[in-house]
Amino acid sequence: MVKVKKTKGSLEFMSKKATRRDVLKYTGLFMGSTVLGDGLLNSAKAFAEDRSSFLLVPPFLGRPTQESITVNLVAGDQEIVCHLKYGKVTESKVASWQKTEDFIIKAKGVEETVLSHLAPGTHYKYQVFVLPGGSSASQLADTGSFRTQRIDHEPFDFAVISDSHITPLKRDFNRFDVLRRASGSISVRKPEFLMMLGDNIQTFSSYHGGHLTDPEFGSWLYLVMRKGLGDLVSSTPAFLVNGNWEGENSWHPEKERGWARQARMAFIPNPDNTTYPEGGSAEEDFYGFTWGNALCLVLNVTGYNSSDHRLNTLKGRADDWTLGKKQRDWLHGQLSLSDAKWKFLFMHHTVAGKGGDEINSRYGRGGGRAFNVGEQSRLQDMMKEFGVQILFYGHDHVFTDIMVENIHYTCVGSAGAPWKFDTNDTGYKKYWTQSGYTWVEVKKDSVKVSFVKANSKNTEGEILHTYEITENAA
View (tube, helix red, strand yellow):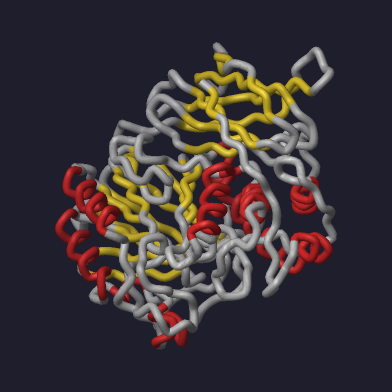
């Protein structure tokens, strides 16, 4: 089964009236007009080591179910005929390989294929083969591995990152390097999946957290982000959460929101309302799944508000954030139906704010400090009623954990953004500012959460803080 997605790509630039030519001049790139654009190709090559000329970025794994997984591929500067081989790993070897049908990826095009007829909770390897134009022999372009969705209650681990704020601008290469280092460290630990809690990219326009100003800009941003993730997402299925810098905020113009949404859905195979029994949104911006004995529900806190919550606008209030009725009802339904032992929520920030001052509170900062503010108080009651143990979030660019009525509000740290917010901004009294990621170990009777500083992309990193929830405490 082959599912095709296509999009155009470009690049974003911080300027009130930035043109595409301004952007490309600033970053030292070139203009282009085919599918993703020649400038996009050059931009990506500037960010990472040489790879196969056939694929512009490593494969991206998404939508892992009990019997299938989606592989998203981006071609390089030539059209290719592609197929994948995949097989179950037994004693470190694949005894029998299955093969997909051939499919074409245009030069700099984006396509997806679904590997199906898999077994739940099983380790697989796969290989990507390409047949370049004019060639008679297929060549190995990339490899990877994955585990399908668990239905047993065996222990598993997953990783959580947030706020990489990736852009293609040369001045922001340090963010890219931090993301590469964190991604490499996570890869060494071999999680079963990865959660990315928003502000994974950073759009620029005439105001803070602005909308896209060109229909091609989103593709550029997601492509460079995928370069930063490197091989992590070719062997670890990833789930994305929308933040307030992806260009899809409810206060953005609908046409420009559509550009951002199209780019995200082209480059990132998130679940939709049909992927899992838990359902979600057809636009892949809120969804749920159960992995082993853990229910994971992903929420979109910036997409369904009626107020403008741009920083310093003084329009949106700390207590008028909302998930919207449809998303809120879906969340209540999934929590009430689930008998999973462990229940986790993932979102960019809480559905209210209580930061260090009024401006930051309006902007949604403060995490667990806002447990009794606005709609977050309704969410807090829901989490108590149905036994949610942890709400994971980002936004504040530090790691901290606040327990409220036996529920952990865990801010997972920053995997790229160089600026860290202090007590004056967030109100937090104890927090860690180092760049890194959160590591979660789920067992039958306990969950351990650790904040890890990524020292090198080839090591497991340094654990800076850990807390543990036991069955009795939960």
